Amino acid sequence: MDQKNRPIVLVVEDEFLPRMNAVEIVTNAGYEVLEAANADEAIAILEARNDIRIIFTDINMPGSMDGLKLAHAVRNRWPPIEIIVASAAALDSGQLPERGMFFQKPYDEGAIARALKSFAA
Image (cartoon, rainbow, N blue to C red; front, side, top):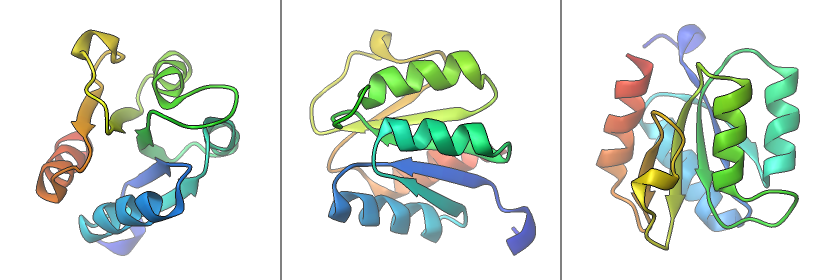
């Protein structure tokens, strides 16, 4: 993947160390990364840009909405954006928006990289 045409992934995580870990996984998989500390920041970034292909969000976050509500908001407002949701707690797949993928923390770096590649294909 050349540097210029790398898909952009928005990582949404309120805790610094887990966010840095997610950024490292996404970067190592060959993607450009933007970061948001909560859903409100993520929505502002999405409203300002039209080049984000994937969001990778934690569920438990402070602010006006958690990561699951963010995932559904993204699916409704920006249908082409792919969604990866992560949480330490288990999640029923019926809670995810259409085409959303769930990974339980601590997640498998290889599985995340494969999910990113399948979404970017």
